[in-house]
Amino acid sequence: MNLCLVNHSDIPRAEVFTLGQHLGERGHQVTVLYPTDGKHIPPQGKIDIVPFPARFLPKIHYVLPNFRRQYQLLHEFTSREGCELIQACDYDYLTSVPPILLKRNAGTPLVLTTDAFPGLSWFFGDRFVDGVARIYTRTAGKRILNAYDRLVLLSNRLVNDAVTLDVPHEKIRVIPIGVDVARFRPGVDSSDLRSSLGIRDDELVVLFVGRLALVKRVDMLIDLSRLLLREQVKFRMVIVGDGEYGEYYRQMAQGVENVMFLGSVPSADMPRYYALADLVILPSLSEGLPNVLLEASASAKPVIATDVGGISDIVLHGTSGYLVDAGDLRSLYTRTMQLLDAPDQARRMGWAGFEHVSEHFNWRAVTDAYEAMYLEMLAVSSDSS
Image (cartoon, rainbow, N blue to C red; front, side, top):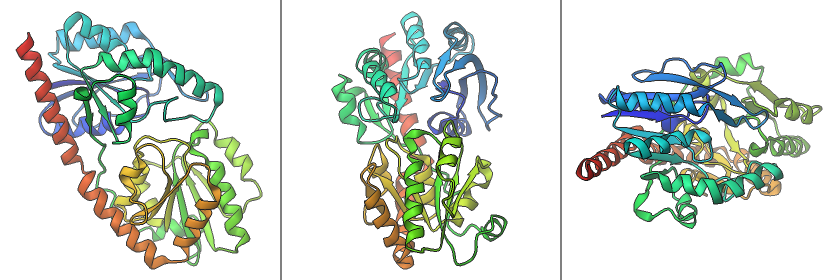
């Protein structure tokens, strides 16, 4: 098959780039388009990567693509390069619009993937932004969703949201992203990392990985650190990632001992950071299907996360970790103390998470599901032409 995948921004999404690599390894021709204002994504295995111009709004990094150039590229790939199917990512980004225009003109089959419904069951954490998102989802977003031939949802919890937006059941598929169990695995050596970071052998490591944005609720990790210090717990709160609110959170953490902001870390080094952790926490206000929890579980680490988005598909409450309500600091503290005080229980939960994601979130099964859907769509398209 000859496929064109559209990433929603200059931040690579797994359901575009990683999926594309696996499809390329199976012999399919895969081209990925992405918007950029000068940032370039490096080559990715067996896929072709093509940028097109765009601007980004500050703070929320929302993309304003050059529609004309994106449409020109899509038209070129379908008319000259023989692209048989276009797959876009996230209806709430305007990069999802040009494929619809091409479908009207050329009849090219379209797939849309999404991991959340902003303003409906996903919230940024800013009242104005969330209000605009709610209006968009119920108006333009609803029309975009229904203009695509298939809607791929990354988690089961999203199905009801899609139905409330009048997406027919027969268009909906639930296909998660996968995790690279060859890279993220138990037993990775992190002793040199512990030493280089100055973390003592008797200190437990609580790890957060993610973008420093309001939605991630890093403020709760800072408040949690205050509570742990009050109980004289020997620990380090290691925060990996950066973003628009990095300085805001760093200022908030001033005077709080044991909180370490490490900034962005090369992807190749991330397995060592998971290996370093005794516990991984994700206290987000909203999420889709977060890579960090898949990677943590594949590394056999227990996790505590908020019960939002598709997280309950990954975290088996009481088995591989704990789910807490968004914003519930008391429950987050209680569950954290429970796992830090019971290392044997924490290890058992970590291994349960490893077994769960290895079975249900491997890229082989994910790629199989996409291939089957593509073949079904192309067969229908051929019969109707």
